[in-house]
Amino acid sequence: MTEQFIAVLVPAASIAPLLCAALLQFARKDDSAHLVNKACAVMTGMLGLAAAAAMLAPHSQHIRWAVTDPVAGVYVGIVTVISAMSALLSPAYLRNNEGHFFSSTRSVRSYYLALYLFWAALITIPVVNNLGVAWVVVEATTGASAVLVAFSGKPRALEASWKYLMLTTLGLSLAFLGIVIICLSGAPHGAGLAELNWSALPQTLSRMPHRAAAVAYALVMLGLAAKIGWAPLQNWLPDAHSEAPAPISAMLSSVLLPAVILLAWRLRDAAIQPLGHTTANAPLVVFGILSVAVAVPFLWQPMPWKRLMAYHTLEHMGIITVGIAISTPLAIAGVLIHVAGHALAKALGFYATIPLFQIQPDAAQQPAHNVAKDSPATFAAMAVTAVTLAGLPPTPLFFSELFIILGGIQSRQFLLAGTLAVLVALAFIGLLHALLEALQSPQHQTEPPVLAGVKNRPAGTAPILIPTLVTVIGLAALAMCAGPLVGSEIVQRLVFGIK
Image 1 (cartoon, rainbow, N blue to C red):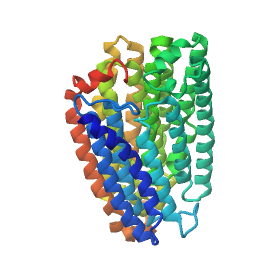
Image 2 (cartoon, rainbow, N blue to C red):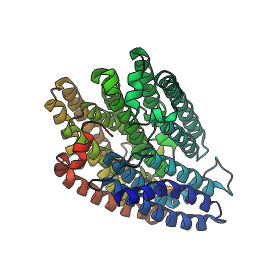
Image 3 (spheres, rainbow, N blue to C red):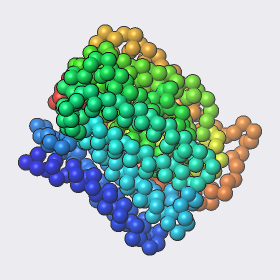
């Protein structure tokens, strides 16, 4: 029965956003488009959560054309929650921000078209059962999200979109070259695309000459690194996250990058047998630690809130990657908690910029100040984000980081665990400093400035209250589940590789 539910719900969850994208193009007025969007977000969200629940059910069955293991269920659930919240908050963003990348008559409909196409691709990545098909879907996310990054039409946004498009496409071209090498060397008799299925990939790599397999693996990992934004290939990430509309920044940071990390995780597991554990794990260790290390100096500098969130994305993608590299039950539990906790907290941090930029328009280009006085609701959202991302107890990221570090110690990877612990502590100090900075008034004035957006404060701050409450409830539930998750069936099924 579970298999039948999965066989229906998984494709339905991927197709529903496509239908929503088409339906929204028939809306003649912006207000009607916003109403249709809200209905679509709720219905598509319900489908996605049902599919995630079916995959997370005990003794869930696999279907031939999709990966429906627990980690796919976790990712589908996260994609659904964040994408639905982003769609529901998009009207609040669009009513106060004009998009000049599209014509004024189609701006709102074009935004929703790209958003739902992005959603459809994101929910497909965790379940697609083939490396080659996954590459196509990831490339599709680049097209949809690049358009959204450029939505405002400002020179900075256009530059950020162009940089994102060029660098990630170049990286994915390297990944495509690695996939071609696998196809030519691992399936010399034309066995077809099935040789790239996740279940068949270990045997495909084993049939290849060792050097060719290592080169192909390195190329695919390097391409995924460019898309994820692992250091030192993160040049596009701060600009794209800063210039994209707030709901899209949330989807980029909370959903897209972890979903591509999932592909790197599956590829690592497939390469362990033919290449050896050390060779297969090396890219994750190097990229993970380097990403956290590169992010730390930036986190200590005063900068606009969205840009700060972007650099924290770099840090947390590094932490997740190190946890995958450690791969003990404790570390894997930490990875799952961290992916979910980071997604909720980081999305809220980006959503908070919708009212923040209304009450402080200059906060898009400089650090925010005096937010608690100007808008307590906005500051509350920022505080929840900062406290969670900093890993303060009893937030779920405190447990996830602790589990990952303890997992490294448990597996006698002392240097890796110790380095991560030091870097996480340094990042913690930087983020709390930014939160305290948001409480203060600028040094050159004793009274807060009267800004153009203050008169609209009630309309600006209202949309952030519900997302803040939903996030707090989700984070609290996640923290309470941290202990039981360590010994759960989900973790045990993942510890020896994603099947």
